[in-house]
Image (cartoon, rainbow, N blue to C red; front, side, top):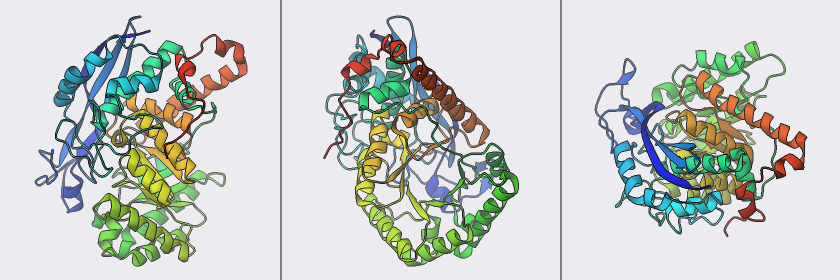
Amino acid sequence: MRVARLLTADALGAYWYDDQAAVRAGAVHDGFDYAGRPVTRGFDRIRMPARALSIGLLLDDGHVAWGDAMTVQYSGAGGREPPFEPAVARATLERKVAPRLEGLELDGFGAACARAFGAGTGTFAGAADGAAHGAEAGESAGAGGAAHPGVLRSPALRYGLSQALLAAHAHAARTTMAEVLCAEYGLPVVPEPVPLFAQSGDDRHANVDKMILKRVGVLPHGLINNREKLGPQGETFATYARWVATRVRQLGGANYAPVLHFDLYGTAGLEFGGDLDAIAGFLARLGDSLAPFRVRIETPFDLGSHAAQLEGFARLRAALERLGSAVELVADEWCDTLADVRAFARAGAAHLVQIKMPDVGSLADSATAVLECRRAGMEAYLGGSCAETDVSARAAVHVALATRPAMLLAKPGMGVDEGITIVGNEQARTVATLRARRAEGDAWRNSTTSSSARARPAAYSPTA
């Protein structure tokens, strides 16, 4: 089966693009909007609608396989790509990518990504370190190091196009996207769900009730994205965290013990003046107050660069261990690319790394990032953004089922229900499919052998 032509359609993400620097500096809500001027490149206002571009591959049997390209809610922050511009992205695809795709034979997902992105982009285990943060020529290499060579450097476009390529291969093989990835990486097919992580947005009380009643495995995120929400010496946040623990006990019952995961967006670093020992003491006391729940803290500080963030996380982790604290650190800001994830994993700088899929780029790079974390003895959080779409969220489910991260973000949107529905239902349906195929035995599966399986490597083998 071959690709006949490339299609595009304007689309919307399920949330908004927010200027994180302006919000962190104290931008005031004006209804749902923010008052004031933006400060980050690419923003014409502090809050803008999340824009996406649907990328379709029309196959020679008439089927269209779709993927969606977009950036994350806090675009332009922490070395990330600026807010997504569909018109620029469409021009890039038509000029640089469409000619490479016409007539492309679907004989392997990795080979197709390499053809689409340009030779040497390294979409698989041999991926070149680094990725560019930007959509067009002249973009900087960003936190991860040298820019990807090849014709398609934008992580957002690699993300969307790789979704379409993976969906096309699954259609051609009459199998699931998860099975295509398992074949490519030499991974076992495990028909078991991955724990879901829901995020509350600013409605951080009612949405916690939704999460508990739907028995989400990891909650609530909390969106502690300014010093007012953290409070003096962190007490406003600590009070909220203790309320979450109490609410879980009240609504969840004795047999429900979710992981409590809070994202501080660097606010503890601001409140404690960058004093890592003071931050460690605060987090250790918080963890003790939330016992016996397992507690994770994401981005307690933002030190302004990849190198500083990695060093700071390693020092904070060591400080927590000296205090005997079980609180787990989750890296996000300044850990954007596959190269960044490798660096954090190999340094053991955190307990988990968020693999923020639109920032990493290709689904193949996200899959590799999860496997790199596992290889280094670190847990992976396969994340993304509330600003994504239903299509990208469903594709993420298949990456998770193939690579087995510690948890998967329930996305898109910030209302809880939509993310749990889209991701949870896609996972449930796929798990049911995989279990049915296992029950039917090898005879049925051999009759629908994936073209990717014929081209797969013997086993996953990350680069040195």
